[in-house]
Length: 390
Image 1 (cartoon, rainbow, N blue to C red):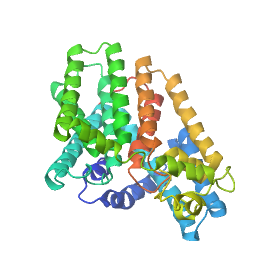
Image 2: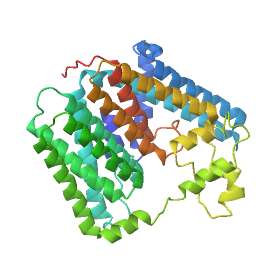
Image 3: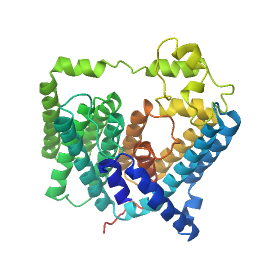
């Protein structure tokens, strides 16, 4: 998993992390399954609900899905890949719970390097034209910003939990990563990640101040972020920066969602079918094409879940959300730690509100900024609050 995460954010080719997943991680998961070393997963309520959701979506698409039959088989493949992705997370996260500090530092290192690599690529190779992208699977600027923020948030959560004072080198690494991520997200000009960052950083700052964090550390972090924002504003100019952020408007998001809602599937209960391509949806001829609206997918995890898997799919999502919040609320964790976990879930919601197609997909960056933080919150809530690091 450490290699897979590295290839996902720093790989020399954008498909290499997918090849590694299919060639190494899937066989490893099969070995664990056949050797019954994943038997604990069979009694995990969140995993069982998610896998039932995948089975439902993959099978019902053959009955309600639009378009050619090969699209239905593709949806089934997505469900199977997503199942292997969750099983890999459930096999890996127990080790993260045993060694949280080691994994937090690892996330910081690869996030810091990936953000720096993206910035250097944007400045030296792209001549600061367009929007910042990264390496590996981070070729989409929205996905790059989302992954950076989620990795930073999880690493910061773990390190803030430690009772012993964090080493100075770890604090410096955290501060450097924070500055580079803030810069990379701003240069990506992706409104979703920018809004998520602007919402999450004040939230976590208020939580830290309330918990009695040292004022000096807080001021240093604020200063670092202010310097990053100031540098971007000076480079672009305040008016030019805002013009670039607003030039794309809503990127047709509202029109895309309206098309799906105004021209719904035959049954809202089951939807159009998982992964149904936009050219087979009624709205393409009735609304999108006449109005010149380019549509490739729903551009929202939640709208996509509703229109592709129907009300039943949304109920699966609501059930999973309920299990998550119940696990956090009923855990033996301190109240401040519970608030931080809810903050991570809120961050995930903002990042997925206007991006992607649905929660079920083949191996994509969505796994790293949706399923990974969701599974992390679940595992952290379920294990003992007294953790040791090896």
